[in-house]
Length: 462
Ligand code: ARG
Image (cartoon, rainbow, N blue to C red; front, side, top):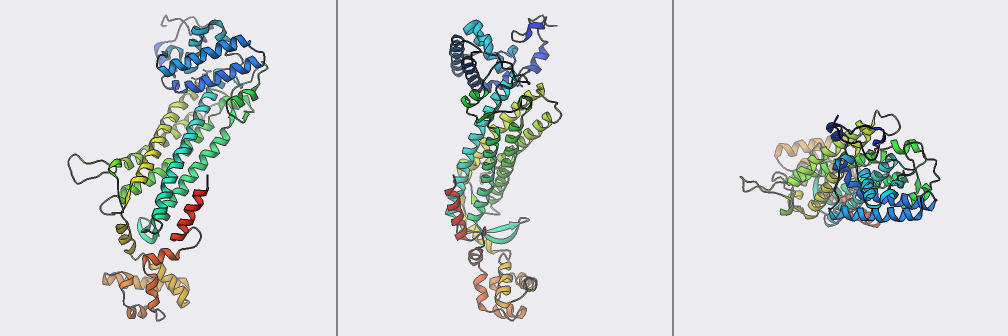
């Protein structure tokens, strides 16, 4: 027993206030104050609708509207004092409204509950974040398109198992990321489309007996339609889970890119040099330039994944409809959103600024017998061998080159002819890395002409 008076918003049946620990575990104002704009926006739309439907008077609506606008400027000016005793953003704002306009404030919560109110506020916040993510991804995609265009002809080794596989163009490698981040952006758009239903008016869980107009508030708040089931409306956090799901997938893509940048910028690989703006030095080893931003992006993906697992775990056993467990949704989403925005922005900067070491890529592209498949394909095409036999003959050529410590193109014709007599001097035309990439013109393949066509296709997309 604390001796404190009961809650001014809901304490009618309570003789005393909450224990200090109860107050601490219950309050969400420390983090949900982030929702103040959305809360006020929702209340303004609700108050207008209540007046238009004759549920409250237009005088009361005007008082409520003025009061809410005052509160908005107080919060923006930093003069609003948030109180933990008032639990959350909804009650902090309503309590201040009462101070400002008196009894008319008490009419605002007619035909509404904090359950539909929080579902609305959070949905509006996630909608804004999805729009920001969409824009950020577009900038990242644009950065990759520019680099792909610039390096459509730059040859690098393509890897499988991180072993040299076949030569590819760096432009094609960049376009792989355009595809990945393009899918991420389309997941954002899908989530926006599914989120486009307004929760306001579901009230506590069962709807209301007041003659509210949910279509009016939905429209005023920029939604296509109201939600169709009041129980689902106050129980649903799928929109937040979807955001965290798509953020986790996008984080995984960012992390793979970060890992490649870390590898490429080592002196051993020598494929890229990071700009000063996106790297750091060592306090003891003067020669070092460390890819810290890439490493941090790689690590921050863990936070986003953690947020997804945390919210899935919060939601998994909840009976319908609202339970207070759901208050734990916000911090995870806020943290993941901030992390994702920062990670995308850092990667966009790195991709734009990174200096590509064309000679280093090219030298690596030609080592490790990367054109062995081209030799096998040549034997199929020019000597009519079945691919399996051509593969075997090429294996023998690789063994011969390995024994002599030279590249395939350095093997004398006479020696190649001991492996297969049909080989002639034209074979040398396919053993260079440039010829190899130029030949890969199948749709989706790595040839410079394909890369340019793909860049043009993506630029024509919105
Ligand atoms: N602060 C609460 C939340 O974030 C608002 C909804 C409270 N509803 C209730 N019936 N206690 O979920």
